[in-house]
Image 1 (cartoon, rainbow, N blue to C red):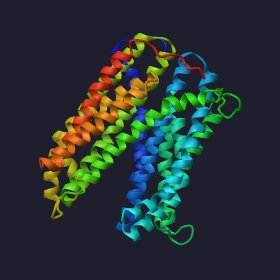
Image 2: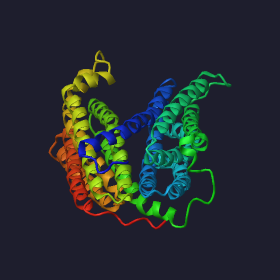
Image 3: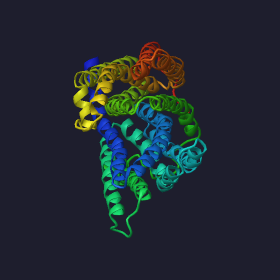
Image 4: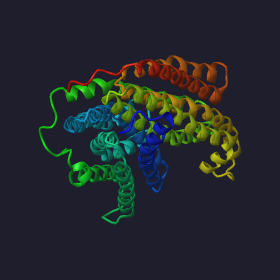
Length: 455
């Protein structure tokens, strides 16, 4: 990051160059879920339903772990900014250890999920299929968590492309293994367990490829992550202290959207289908904000490590500006092309397609506001995490998502009978409050640099 401080437009270009591979990698990780759904669709609708439930548990746990492990990127980038590559490598090693520690309870949660589903009255056949799927998939939580930690390390040293390549590699392995197991290439054709094994194989493929790269590739071999003794006392505590509020914040936002989907289930099937179309659309577009947030976080952290307060502020504002432009553009596409986008998900010749399109069109207009607010709050939160401020964003998120967003959505949707439009309007309001509060907090917190780490 020589030549700092650069102008805000120049900082924006540097952040964009770092963010693009991260965005593609995030889309590839989303593709793992998509490929799993396509493979389950070859088995039948019961298998798809079981896979949807199982994936909801797996990726919800992964999102929380991702929040905690994002502290790896913060601390590695700050150490790099201070010119201490050995300490950066120590934080990377402790990030992998933290990933392993998080994977144990997450994997146990997956094994226990069928008992929870049975307790809330899910149909026994569906519970059994979900259990079969999760038992095969659960070991994949370990490599997936390690991949998350290593992706943050690579982004922090500004080499995110390998993470993108390995994510695509993992999806290809998942597709190949799934096809082989369902087609009976290696014995009798398997059912949902075969798809779970395929997703797990994709996770191990990603981890294996990244570990080989870190061990043998010249650009990163000098960090010596395979060597013992690099980490120092206190580094794991540093990661946990900064990371656990991020995990809570990520989990609160995930639950925020999951509960909205549950509430949408009280409406008609056409409305539920419209909600699904809208949700898939904003989730895919949100990967742009995720990439920009990661890039902003590690670049702010590195500038903070270098002691360059001007660069910290310019990088943060550049990231927020990129988010407004990028997410505003995707929002405009959703607002203008609502019916065309809905037609990508549902055959227009189906008898109930017209009703679904009628419900989806106004949701995608609200989704335009979603993109603007959600992108801004995600990137502002990333900038704050780069300053090691994780508890503030956690508190803001909890207040904005729940007492404001969820409560107003429920009032508008059910009490005022605006139904889906009301639910989504409440979500947009919560995200708007979070966006404003987090942006103001970045403005205030970036007036001085955080205290250096002791680990």
